[in-house]
Image 1 (cartoon, rainbow, N blue to C red):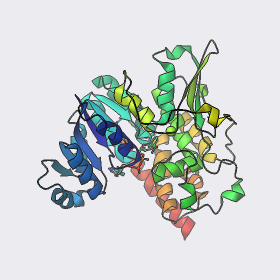
Image 2: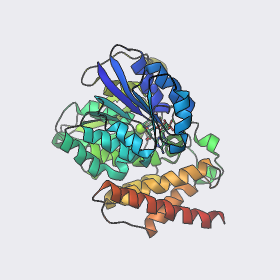
Image 3: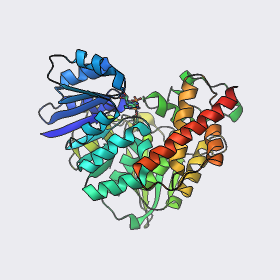
Length: 385
Ligand code: NAD
Ligand code: MG
């Protein structure tokens, strides 16, 4: 039996993970399930799976969760430190699917505990990639990418030496506004932005896909997971989201990984690795799909791509600042406080005015993250005044 913990269990990736775990109850024992504020969903899945512990991120919700799980035998905890403690319990396999930099401390604790960490939470790697990769090496933890593109690259690499890689080709759907002009993007509403053409995902990553900041974050994510050099990582727009990414080797042979756009496929890969398990996902029907299209990304209409590349080149704390400002700006957009095009504009504005020394510790990263959020708040105040 494999012991598994799911951080961000009530979210899109968390529930897809649970779906796979539940299909084979004899194969898995659930250690920790966590959520930020959705007490009812967390209590329901904790009871159903017989989890050892359920943790709610918001400390003030401790009483509500305790009441909801009364008599269940599930241990209850709350608050940020409790998330870290749950990660340190050291399940064999941990899904890191909290959204945003909020996942950084729990994910680091899981890496330090030395098991297998399936990483969906790309923001933590963008903010603290060097420190996370170091932690994994030090503890012997196995870090498996769940983001569909990075999971595809991992599969295409199949253990090959990075020295043999000519290019990593990161595919992008282009999001719901792929063909729109800047002028046509001005009045985009949150409801339009979260309606992704191919994938069903949480609100934050859906907005990131619409601005293409998601691909920018994934570029930085790829640079940490597969350190071939930034000039060897390319973004290719592929609207059908059938090819999840490719690796071109120096002999000019290119391998691609294909599949239906269903996160349970990369999650199942990480859950079973190095074996394979069956999933309920749709087989790929290429005859029905008929054609696959490709185009170059447009950094004029999608400046987030340029900003992320610049942040990756600058290194140090810059990617953490980029990520923090983007998180704040996306939340403000979803709240109706700023416009769609303001998101990348605010990120650029803060990157121009604020920098922080290269972080040596997670606390340094979190300090840069907090300061960047404060700077973003000021920019937004001026914008909406
Ligand atoms: P989601 O919004 O659906 O779920 C987020 C989860 O994190 C929820 O369980 C929520 O309770 C928890 N959470 C949110 N804020 C928290 C906080 N401050 N403290 C503790 N827990 C908190 O998001 P999602 O779409 O499942 O995405 C999760 C992560 O996976 C993101 O980093 C995203 O970029 C990445 N990812 C998602 C997909 C996808 O298809 N949804 C694909 C690739 C990568
Ligand atoms: Mg992705």
